[in-house]
Length: 121
Image 1 (cartoon, helix red, strand yellow):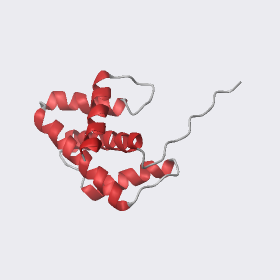
Image 2: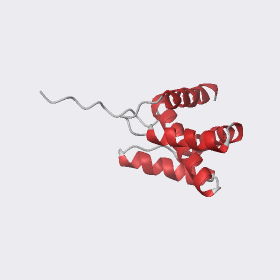
Image 3: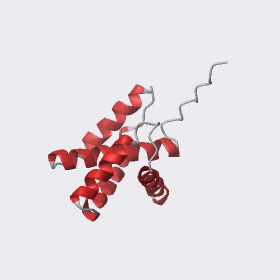
Image 4: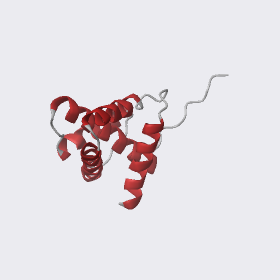
């Protein structure tokens, strides 16, 4: 008997929003450490739209920009509180954790932080 595919949660669910903040924070940190630049809020919103489009989901531009702003704040906080080496490691671990087969204590704690950001918002 084939395994049942889990339904994709709606784009506006808490879990999806936290996952989008996590993924965009990882992307922002990677770009910052590799190129010394920060994504703009609009660029972040475009990343989110592209990711959601792959699963035939969407969020309003206002929602995407808001999630982009939350991820920007988190990414800058991380970069400002860690050494370059620790920041590179964090960005790498977060990018690796985008693969559902990768398990990481650091990534789990970062995902919890993303959920807390949403709850505090």
